[in-house]
Amino acid sequence: MPSMIAQIRLVSSHPEVYEPCEDSFALVDALLADRSKLLEHQPALCLEIGCGSGYVITSLALILGHAESGAYYMATDINPYAIQVTSETLEAHGVYAELIRTNIASGLEGRLDGLVDVIVCNPPYVPTPEDEVGRDGIASSWAGGENGRRVIDKILPIADNLLSEKGWLYMVLLAENNPSEVCLQMREKGFASRIVVQRSTEEETLHIVKFWRDPDIQIENNESRSKNRNGNTKASESFFTQMSRLSFWKRDSEQ
Ligand SMILES: C[S@@+](CC[C@H](N)C(=O)[O-])C[C@H]1O[C@@H](n2cnc3c(N)ncnc32)[C@H](O)[C@@H]1O
Image (cartoon, rainbow, N blue to C red):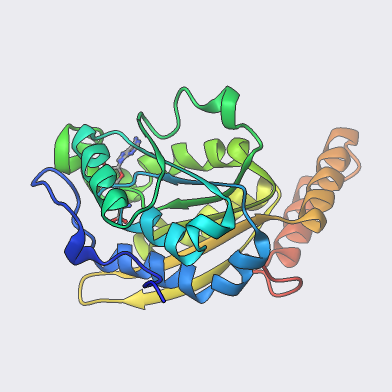
C-alpha cells in the first residue's frame, strides 16, 4: 500500500523555501486524524494556500488516494521557488496539482468562488514587526506582523468566498494568534470550528483548527442581524445573549 503521507526525504528543497516543520507535520496529522471524514466528504476540489515545499498538498492527495478520489488539486504560493519545489515534490510522488504563484488566491476568485471543498493552510503566523510581512523569499514563510495575524486575517474572508457550501478549512494557528478570536470572526461568517490537533513544542503551541459552515450559526447570525436592524434589542442584551450562546469549539453535529 502506498504511504499515506509525502515522504519528505524525497522532497526537493531550496534555501528560500520553508522546510516542513512541526507545524506542517501537525497539519498533516490533523488530515490523517480526519481521514475517514475526508474520504466520506468526497471533495471535488482541494486547495492549499501557501504550499511551500508541497509536503501538505502532496500528503492530502495521498491521504485521499489521489488517482481514485477524482479530486482536483490546486496550490498557491507567493514565493516562486516554492512553486518550483512543490512541483518537484508532487512529481516525486506521482501526484498532479495545478500550481499558481499568487498572493493568497488572487486572480482565482471568478473561477473558484463557492467551489472549493477543502482548503488547507499553514500561514505565516509568527508575530513580527509589521514591516517584515510580505518580504521576498523565506521571510514570507513566517512573518505575520502584529499577533501574527496580518496574512491570516486576509485569508479568512477569501476562504469564505472560495469554500463550497460543504467546504472545510483546516488552518494552523498559534496560541499568540488568539485562535478563539479567529473562530469568533469565522462564526460571524456562519462557520463552526473545532480543534483537530493541539501540540506544544518548546517554542510554541500550535492548533490545527477546522472550520465548516453551520446552518444553525447562519440562522442565529441572520436573526441577530435582523433584530439589530429592527432595533428590538438593546445593545447590552444583544451582547450578553450572544456571549452566552457562544461556543467556539463546536460539539453538536461535529464535522
Ligand atoms: C509556514 S509556510 C508553510 C509551507 C507549507 N505549507 C508547510 O506547511 O510546510 C507559509 C507559506 O506561505 C507562503 N505565503 C506567505 N504569504 C503568502 C501569500 N500572501 N500568498 C500566498 N502564499 C504565501 C510562504 O511563501 C510559505 O511557503
